[in-house]
Image 1: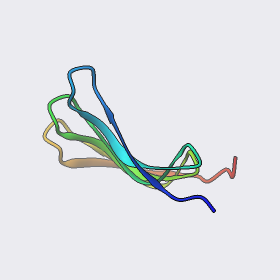
Image 2 (image 1 turned 45 degrees about the vertical axis):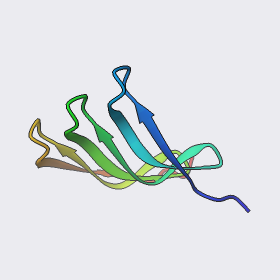
Image 3 (image 1 turned 180 degrees about the vertical axis):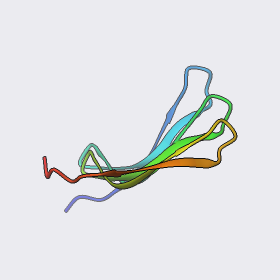
Image 4 (image 1 turned 135 degrees about the vertical axis):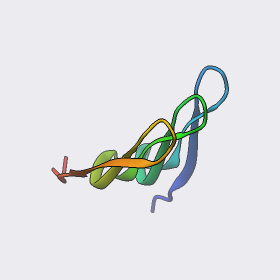
Length: 75
């Protein structure tokens, strides 16, 4: 049985770029993506590497400004 593994990726300057978890080497569960200045850029859910459900995009101040609904293709 596979387990979710916490995962973080960083920009070249060391600031946090993305935070979430991997399952079988693919993005899975809730993820957050950040700009170099630390403000949130985007957040949403992956299902075994595929973006699913509602994804929120944030403005330069980190405030939500757009929601996109991703269609699950089952790939």
